Length: 143
Ligand SMILES: Nc1ncnc2c1ncn2[C@@H]1O[C@H](COP(=O)(O)OP(=O)(O)O)[C@@H](O)[C@H]1O
Ligand SMILES: [Mg+2]
Image (cartoon, rainbow, N blue to C red; front, side, top):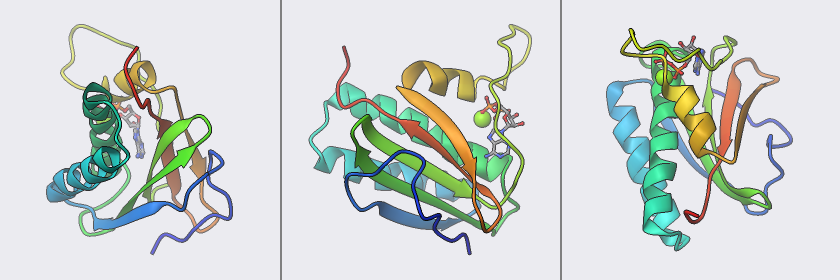
């Protein structure tokens, strides 16, 4: 189990909506469906929702690919903050996410570069229980 840190990395204005998952490829779609329901329920602009879902997909894919072994716990939290809607994705690995330099000769390694362009802010925090949470502040509407 991944337990709660006392504070969220971005101060929350609402209780989080939480989805507990086990690491698998199916978890990525489950997280997207969960996030779509939450974002639509808040009435955010349609394009902003699609962009937010891209961010959620990248973070959950990373938790699956880099932050866990199959069957281990991953969780998704969604809440509102003063800075905007926040997604947190927790996994049990202490390894840290980092933006890779953009290159033209590889097929992967662009996820967090894309997140850093699309999100208002992103970052990570180690959890007291081990593992970490990777978070992004999303946008409610497109400019
Ligand atoms: N949840 C995570 N746990 C551990 N390492 C991570 C996590 N997310 C990202 N990383 C590290 O950051 C790198 C960059 O992530 P990303 O830009 O999404 O590229 P990719 O997933 O294609 O490798 C990854 O290759 C990995 O080393
Ligand atoms: Mg990735």
